[in-house]
Image (tube, rainbow, N blue to C red; front, side, top):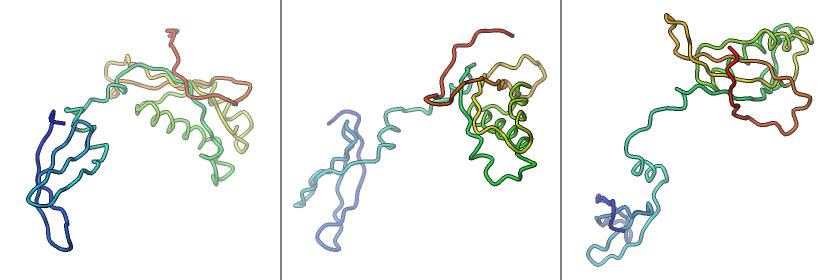
Length: 177
């Protein structure tokens, strides 16, 4: 209870409208222990979890996950994303939604979509876009010297027979560039 503690002043409401000033201390379990001052005996109260985590971590961590080359397989539900979209704009919008999903998932601005994925999205015509699509998202280092972005995402089509039981999986990448 004595390790890594700090003191601060807390105002508590005791017996109607009178305020009692007392000291509090942060225990090792993240509880704020209130000490007795004068004739008023006080208990303890719980702190928010975020305050406890903030004290333990110390410095802010850098987003190291964004700086890694990684490959994931995901299922994109296009039904919800294309709901209430005009029928003659559904296939072009599906391509844009796949691009937006890849940007959000892999945190890169540069997204490149494989032509096989585009052909699959357009396979039933402009109106009847497939309900779901399984894609492989690969964050890769940009080899172009004068590019603004350090990484890009390559989105490729993964053919599956059924979508039952599929989850987002990290894939071990084989270099086939």
